[in-house]
Image (cartoon, rainbow, N blue to C red; front, top):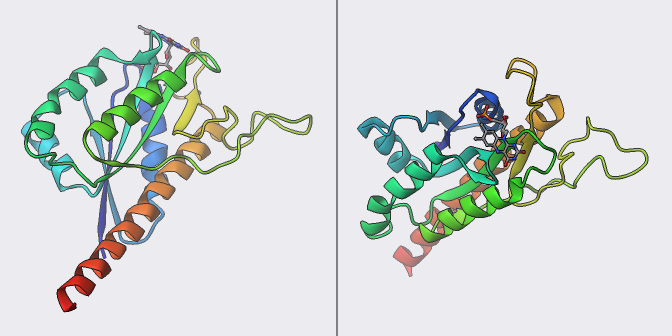
Length: 203
Ligand SMILES: Cc1cc2nc3c(=O)[nH]c(=O)nc-3n(C[C@H](O)[C@H](O)[C@H](O)COP(=O)(O)O)c2cc1C
């Protein structure tokens, strides 16, 4: 079965875009998965069609002033039309990621915002199932999930460095792990739903 995953993101200066590309790369590693990167700067008809056709949407935004960027928030508000049309995104798989300058930087608040938004759409949230790293004497910033997030993928980018340098390899591996998990879960969910539909048809 072919599965479609969209990675819908905003990035003001390229750092979250780099994280989005890593999420997409992780999802692409799962066979029979078609992945589309969807920048949210311009809300075109094509963008809405791509999101509607997707089985899973992974949402990403930089953390600005402790929450989602204004561009991402404008997208969230624009989805109220989808919400009002009989919950058209209901039962799509959802996940989220965010990037910011500080190690914490209040990124968790941004993930809460995305997860709540997905819940309002009746989407099915999938978190990051990786132990937090960099939290023992033997730990290192090279550990996967070094920022210790469960709800979604976090990454950190030094404020004085461009997206060619930062976020670094461990945060990109963390983003890849999220993308892969979203794609795998979507396959399992769609296969399970098809099996249940068949079972009820033959009952
Ligand atoms: C308006 C604005 C607000 C910001 N607020 C925060 C913040 O609350 N926490 C934080 O850690 N970094 C903050 N930063 C830093 C950005 O999160 C950081 O530069 C990030 O890498 C930007 O991602 P982008 O390149 O995808 O836009 C802020 C930057 C801007 C421009």
